[in-house]
Length: 307
Image (cartoon, rainbow, N blue to C red; front, side, top):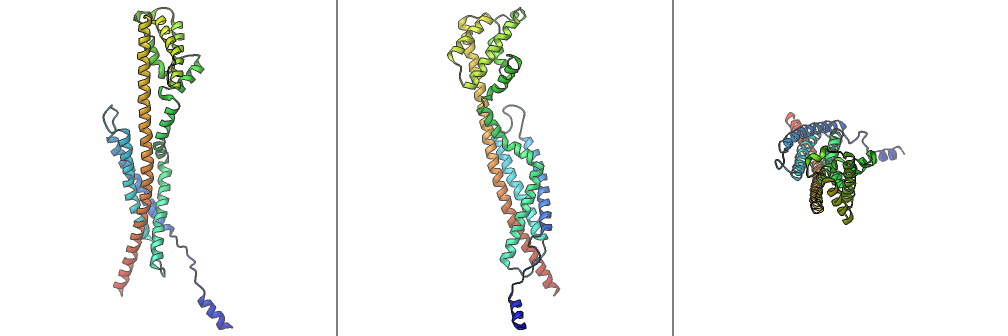
């Protein structure tokens, strides 16, 4: 009976009591990758500011800047993930009695975990900045969709709260409508009437911006209002209304084009940013497997020399 139990005990598989995960090398590699990422992000920010200019038609466009930033993120992931993964594989202790395939799998898993921890560290530090950059396109698209190219929403709120005052977004166009033929009329009595006319014109422009067009009745009324308040003839007043409405439409088109460019740049940044993360994960796994193999080879060589 005793011999039967002994044979059974010998045939039973032996389970290791230690975990296959070496958190020390993982955390060390993650901190190294996160630190290098932070340094390279600062370097990229400095290089990015050199291609941005506050002057019109000078410097890179929004799309160029977004693509350049995304490409730099790929480079950052390549370098930082490679360093972090290699350190993770090189610093772990040698596994004894483990098959070669299992050793390779564990090294790649350790590299992936080091990359994941480093990514979480970087996101916790730079998360707000990255979220703001990615959300730029969404915010721009929602601005156009809400008809805010001319500040329509803000103007409507201002009119409702102040009893008919014109908004900042439409004040220039309203001033252009009611600019008198004789500047001396600005000092003449009747300021309350001018303010009321300006408020009506503001509400018409805001409603037209939200609807996308000016109705014929509103256009005719604007011409009559301008003629009454500026001393122009009806024909000249109508021509002024047409000119101002053309300026309003041009401003709206430019705002839509800028918002669409920002949306495309945000989408490009998000897609290439996700690609850079996947590249970083792959590089970390490969680097960890390489570092682990070199660590085992060095130790084997060292033990062979000692013998």
